[in-house]
Image (cartoon, rainbow, N blue to C red; front, side, top):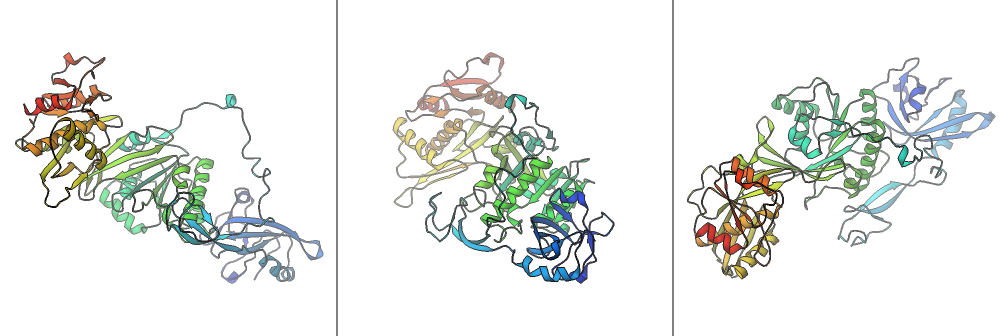
Length: 556
């Protein structure tokens, strides 16, 4: 133990390792205490703490003591601060301080939605999932320690009339990546919190690292809880790009991350990944529901108050959704999904949620040895160079977000080996494929009850555009009849349950994309050309009403 007469912390244990330290008053108002040598304001790297609770009490001789319970090198360590405190008073008052330590209790928290219960239950009453409750320890917030409602933060926020709020556009950061900027809605908004998730090894960290290495003149802090600084250096050397203002930090303690962020003052903060970060204010292990919720809420507060955009990288569970509580997706501003098959070279970046842009945008990347390359025209890469003479192949004009591209739809129909025919679809909704097969059997008269049907979208893509329906049933029928579709034909149209070809949106964009890639004919729904001058196009446009008409155009 040691003491100093003015502005001194008294360490509960291991005090002999550090000299007496002074606290700069300018840090106290921020809620962050940087332990500094006496008479200086240069913080020591080893002794930084976040203040959790400040108490004030009086003891013998009328002296006033200030109790700071902090989280730092020692969990819930207790320190004293006073302007006139001697060694004798320090030893006498220490047992009183130890009684103020945080108490914990055991609760059971649902890993799916974050609901808690005092005892274990099989089925969660909130989300309906089974066997999702896990035991966790949380701190008990007593009445003496709880902040008084209505009196906290009055100097931070006040109600303002709507008409008095200045309407200004969001300030966005150009990430020097056309695909990522498009999905984000034009760039990363300052003060926003974005979350990107995907399968392990899909390329999330590579995408983020190569993006920030392009940002010359922008100070970035990359916090990695999964990789060491040496591993990140090796990856950065492979990507080739080099930014002089990129800081690397291998840390999992959230409080230490905030201290480094306050010292560096970055323009962009990256956290990889949120499931590896832990806060010492929560008793559970990293990656648990409590830790993910507490860490994400603290990072959100930092982003909104400092104006620094934060990009989180998250894991996904076996169902394909973001791992952790659903509240994680609710509190962030943007949720991006990075998907694709690891056996293919293409990666798709989708926007699931975006408060500052459209969720219909799509980004396409190609995985290479030196990182991810933007694919500005995916149609040329997704189409086979020569499929002439092959049955079961049809080209569809699809729309994803603001871009149109042509995809290759492959189907294989064979006799069923077992009693029950197989139905399999890769990159396409299996239930919708079964519906189209029923329409093909009922409306077109082609029987497929004892046939195995396999459908594949080439390139490892996942397509949700209903305009690909006409190409799907055409590929299935082509494989069943073993008849090829002319190589210069493109298809676009939604198939209804009565066998009609329904109009699709943005048909002119689909036609122009097919014409640009050299297709000579395109089949589209009838009366889908309102307001479009088809005479200016060199491609032949064929309008069809029902699937029977489309089949006659394709197979004669």
